[in-house]
Length: 360
Image (cartoon, rainbow, N blue to C red; front, side):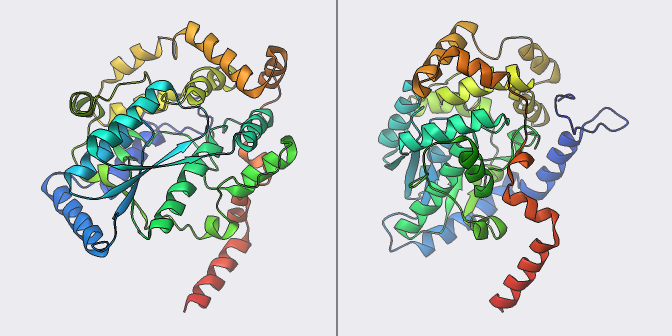
């Protein structure tokens, strides 16, 4: 990590706040060895008991990426009966689609695909680009979370097992991406820059934002096993024919383009710094290996050109209009009246006090 994170802080030994956070989160949330196996067994037993009369006992998300694929693989080993949820936002690569199909077919997992209204979603993504914040992936992330919550409610289960894990996902600066659960932020960006009313887009409410419904429902099972990406990938390739797609979250064409081209070009943010730093702290690669990787292009320049042409076609934009957006003044999450502003006022404390009183 470096000062492309404008709020980064280094201690007297040159260690940044993100590395300290990684160590703290590891102590708090990661349970390893026999203790981790015991904890996971307890979780699995509870899920099975609560859902013994249901067709499914949990929900998992599948994107075609390594983390979610390994969760699917592990969940079946544990004897659970998951329903897999995939959000189709119109940007899946062919490889991602094949990975998802292989996962579900070879592991005998039912798949529930939620297809976003393209007219709405296209307009929302374009609005986020015009907003000039580094958060254009927020709409997809928001919809994925809500889709899993709604699916769990639909089939009557209380547990959503995810591929998030502390070891490899703790170095992302808030300045690079925030507001994932903030519908106020999303709808205000759309109101200012969009042209289509969001009638079907899945979203959380202000109440959900203040009192999150996902805290106890989401279980990050990779925090209870000896999980290593570099060890997991060959297992998945051999067992279910999974194939690597070239970078973290690059199973989505838009994510590949946004993280690999747009963010570095417009903002100077290279998310590989975050991802590689987490892997260094996890002991999966060395710092020197990470620095060597950063010397390479984010992804092949010719593919960047192909992806840019594809984005122009999907958004029905000219290169000139996209360049105008690219060079527009940079903005942030806080410029669009997000729900997050409530945390900065006494109103949130008052609402929380009132909520606790009503619950009693």
